[in-house]
Length: 264
Image (tube, rainbow, N blue to C red; front, side):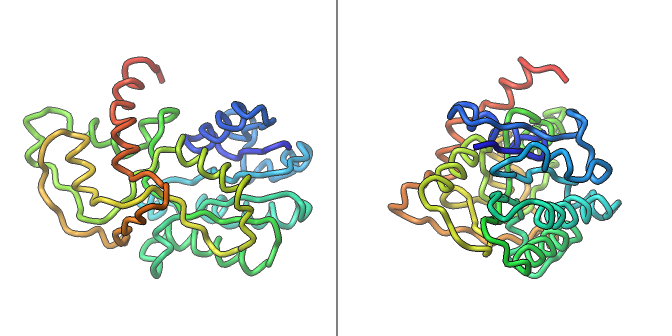
């Protein structure tokens, strides 16, 4: 097997680490390695002759999509379709969507992902998977993750009382667990569906509750953010899937480790 990973972020690196541990060949295609989409197209990926392609590259956040929507269309819609139309059908394609697509899109970010989901499904291509994920955190680029951002934005402890966090539900998901779970699904279950597959830990919490765990104190309860409409995920007892809190407790000091050992 030969896996092409598009994107040098937290998830892409977690997948590469997991594949390498299994002695499976992989290569990350990213801006830092000279692959610049859309300028580079997919010719370099085709030349690599992969058996699997993981499209983890993203364009930014919900707020960034409001400022410049073009990169979101390029990376969330154009790139998946170009891969579908240029790679042989026996190449397994893996695309990542968002849990925001579980309802009618409320943001341009969600709209681009919804368009990707519908476009990919319309092709009817075999060996193609869409995963809905959300609230990722990892150590490769910690400053892109909510826990690190919250700690940085909190700043002076005297300002903590003024922090307000929304009551939207999330399922905090560590990328190392996600990568391991995705590869286990690939090996064991071999899903044959173009319908989006939700991959997340058991249970959920509000952004406020997660923020309080990160900061170690209470914060003000804010209104729900209409651009991030997520519903709480009920526990699936006996599923063998760990809860988000169990996973968080195992990794809750990750941002301190990164902050003290890694330089930009």
